[in-house]
Image (cartoon, rainbow, N blue to C red; front, side):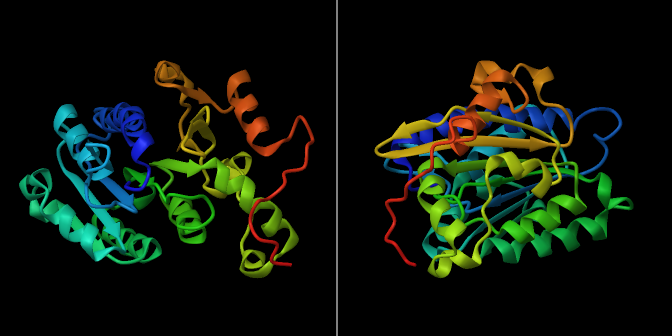
Length: 269
C-alpha cells in the first residue's frame, strides 16, 4: 500500500479493526475449525518509510496475532521485485508459519487462480470457505483485475472484500470510458453502486472520501452478511443503504445532482 504517504496512516487505522472483525467472526463455533484465507493484492513492501507506517501485509498479520485466529493461510502479491524483497525481509513475515504464507511476484490476476485451486484442494465445500481479499491499486480502474476478481468472488461468497480507491481517478477516467476513447474504450465503468452485483456481495459499507494532496480516497468493504450490526460508523464506515451511505454514492456518481463530470485527462477521441 505504498504511494499514498499522507493518507497511509489514516487508511491503515481504519482497515485494521475491520480486518480484525472479519477474523473474529470466523472464530464462531460453526467455522473456527476451518481455515481462514487472506489475499492481499498490490501488497507492497510491508512498510511505508515516508509515512513511517506498516502497510497492509503487516497490518493483517498483527490482526491475526491480536485475535488469536489460528490456521490462517496468507497470500501476498506485488509485481515490483524490490517491494517483494522488502516484504520477505520484514520480521513479522519471517516469524509467520512458512507453510501458511505465500509471497508471489507478479500480476494481481495471476494470483487469484492459484488461491482458487489452493482453497478447492482443501475444502470439501469450497463455497463455504471463509477469508478476505484486500486490494489497494493506487488508482481506480487500473490495477484491479476486475474480471478475475468478479469470478473469484462469485465462487467464494464468504470472502470479505476490502477496497481502497482513488475517487479522483474515477471522475477523471469515467468520461473517457463512457465515450470509448483510446485504450479506455476497452474498459468497463465500475461505479460503487454496481459493486454489489459485480462482486456478488449484497452488503457494503464505505467511508466519506478523504482529500489528500489533490487526490481523494474512499474505502469500501463488501460482505455477504449485513454490515450495519457491528457499529462501524465509529470508524467512519457507513452502510451503503443508510442515508449517509447513499449520499456518499450519489456524490461520487453525481446521481442526484445530475451534473456531468468533466475530465482533466487528455482527450483521446
